[in-house]
Image 1 (cartoon, rainbow over the protein chains, first blue to last red):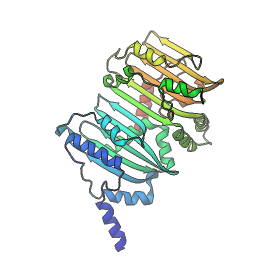
Image 2: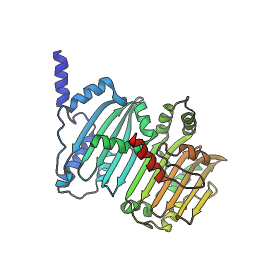
Image 3: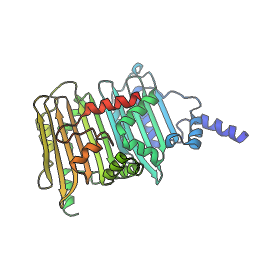
Length: 163
Length: 189
């Protein structure tokens, strides 16, 4: 019981530690661009305890960083999609990119294979008010759902996380 | 291979992806567009997705069979708030990549009514279809679909709305607006 409690405490304390360098680089790039830091999500680490066990929708790990109230920030004015592309590097494949000037929304999705059954998706969405960086560790079936309808899935995921 | 390499280099295509080359003029369109969508699915991803398509459902089984012969799907679409944001010269520069004998234009449809033009260019290697490109131009929209692999133009209809491919009416046009309506319907479910 004690060890389970300790594991939960450790998990809840975890934030973006253990995430890939690229995830942290994107978070840093957004932080520098908007002079802000991601919102602290209490007990988010617990999500991964459950994800690792229950694998909801084929997802076994989630890293998440949410930036809020971006319109209050003074921007550096750099080209964010280019910065994100630079942070991601070549080991991640570009998967889906949706950019709407009308809504000021950019969604960039990259993917990388980690092993025969393990894939990672790196999603970044930036809106006028909010930015979200998500890294998902998925099984092949979950990734296949993305491939079947990439654009719609990216926009829907962005909407769900952003809510 | 010796024959393929110079062609690939000539077109400036990355070997891994075999993406078609976007001329600088078209690349710059992103800045003018109200919406840009870019989908890149390589062969490995397509094969992975096809494994999870059902053999029992007739439609899915058919798509599975089609996707099994593909090595890549690349979609790029631009939507503009105002008409005529891109020039015919940009389109011509892009189209110039698809020269005979490897490429042949098999469909070209023009609609004076709504200013919509669509064309399908087919690539063949040793009498085998090895890919196709769909270019659809409308006053406020530009869509380019590049499918690498063994695909027949008539299969486009069945692949429309799947794997990032807009709904395509062979001999007609890519119905982006239809796709969006379908997306909305799915969102409402």
